Image (cartoon, one colour):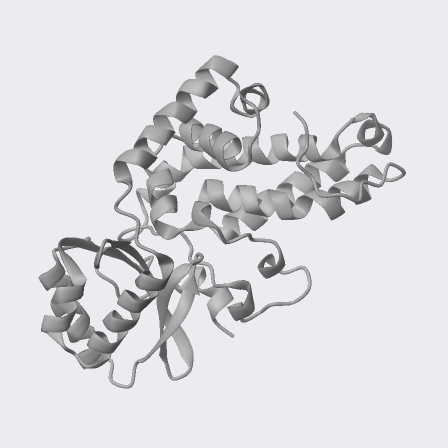
Length: 306
């Protein structure tokens, strides 16, 4: 496996080279594979723990530390994905990928924070991550490594533990899932306009306006993780979603709704008494909102709260 590391390779100290050149790539890879920043950080930590557990002689014998780190991180993620389905059987309500703010909006931004490492592009859009969640672990790893990070199928095979031909089939199957889930492309500027109109309608408790902005078959999913109140089942239909949102506005007076970038796309953040209590991501199809994801689980809102 060849490395996709950044320039600055320090041949005198492969450990230092690995840290300086590969940490950003590893956190980006692990987040896309797991949909959880907390789990991604744990994977990267475990990857470096295994690196430092080797003797200096063994480290120096590795031709490409970055490739070694990527392979180890990919295998750890594959194992975690295999157990995630079992762990989520006990998860209270719906599970939604952890939302990420724009790096300029990261509350706890410090040098070395994930804000400096996560690249926000179409491969972290909430709709994209949700489709990845529906894939098998092997499909997800093969697709992300090959189609997003541009590793060859021979390299992917080293991580997945299958033949290159099998990995090609896995990625093809994943690609088909992506195509089947895709909706008509709406320019980002128009998406922002629609989300802004949605915000204003919600603030005004205008049910008719909300219904007009939501697709008739829209789907709303909330993630409270059992830690805070949230709808335990998906809310189906634009009208039901609109009425539910107005009920929330009635129950929580003084809710401050802000336009924010969520996973690289126009989104909303709701604050109560200065604290972020929900982050909302949208999937806009044409001129209407097709999907709405509301994350309330406080464990997933760390980058958004002081």
